[in-house]
Image (cartoon, rainbow, N blue to C red; front, side, top):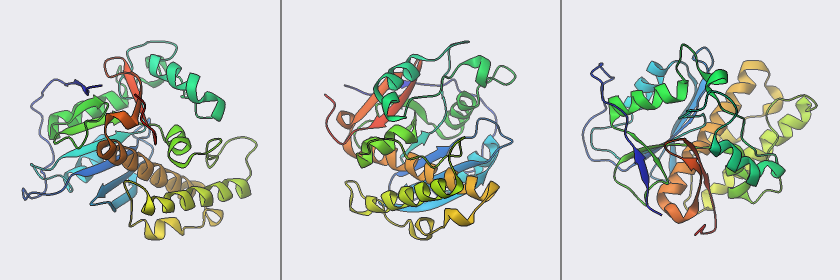
Length: 275
């Protein structure tokens, strides 16, 4: 199955300056995008099989642009995986992508939240759509699914950590590290420790991920409030970055695509060929 692209319209607004123009290996970016700019966004970058940078302190789209510009030279290829709806054509209900993914993954607790414009739009704008348009205009990214095998361009796709965890780590159900009714602080901390341990196993995966270091030793049981949320956002950003690194490295046969680029899509990695 060939990659499908949907370009965004060009604009003339000024953008953050890019890093130096020397040739560099591709980078793989994960964004755990908050649905509102008032909340924090987690971000991570992988390069050369290594976690290069991670933060849980980004806020508005301009801060994301500035952070990304530090790592993008004019010639570097890049893939961004964003955990947030990137295209929401429907006013009510849910997207086809949400429905298709939930049919397959819902029994494992990894169904998608319903995305529609009534829920997500602020001043007629959905944040994910606006961010994709901005990154397209400033850095030349195109929304794409599946990700081409070792493609030389700049691609953005929507990803979802819960089914990615189940797929990559062969789990019977999702990791339950998010704060929800009925989950105690002790059980949440235990699930965070499990999450960190599983990310650590990626050092021996294909493709590998190294350099997580101290991120894997943070004790979630000692965190509360904003600090605990920041850990969640950074770990999820690492997952998003690894998913697109995996997709780029393995190619379309190892990617499940739900929905479509035009209607909204979700990319989930697969350890086995899907077609």
